[in-house]
Image (cartoon, rainbow, N blue to C red):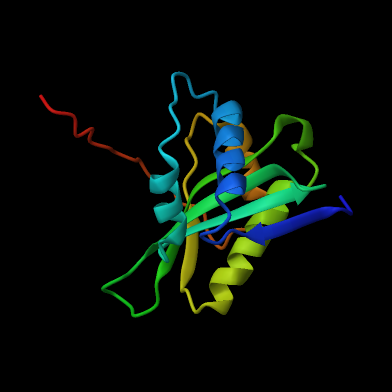
Amino acid sequence: MDDLRIEKLRAKDLAYFKDLIGLFKDVFEMEAFELPADEYLSNLLANCDFHVFIALQEDAVIGGLTAYTLNQYYSTKPLAYIYDLAVSRQHQRKGVGKALLKAATTYFRQQGYEEVFVQADKADSYAIDFYRQTSPTEEEDVSHFYYTLRKQ
């Protein structure tokens, strides 16, 4: 894709961020999703431990990823955790996801991070195949546990 641009969003890029969230909603088939208020999203974008990279084609968001900085106690170098990565359905399998991953890992390397990691659900064979094709340093077989913190 010759006209593909990858950009790291800044605090002022709320419109692009909202477009990306809409893309995530579509690709991840999120039912009953309500977008948080603009003030909340702007504050999130301004947080130096939150990172958003978008793929643009003719100024339209066609993909993106979000990542969080995790500060360690084993090392003074932080880790980057990629939380979401998605490409619009009509642009999948065209190198957009790989370009996003490359831009993010290059950025984090330049910023002195020790490692970038991402998880994929075992049942999501497409995601697992995608990440395997990106030449990761290592693949771990882990189980992910979560605890919902609703009032009981």
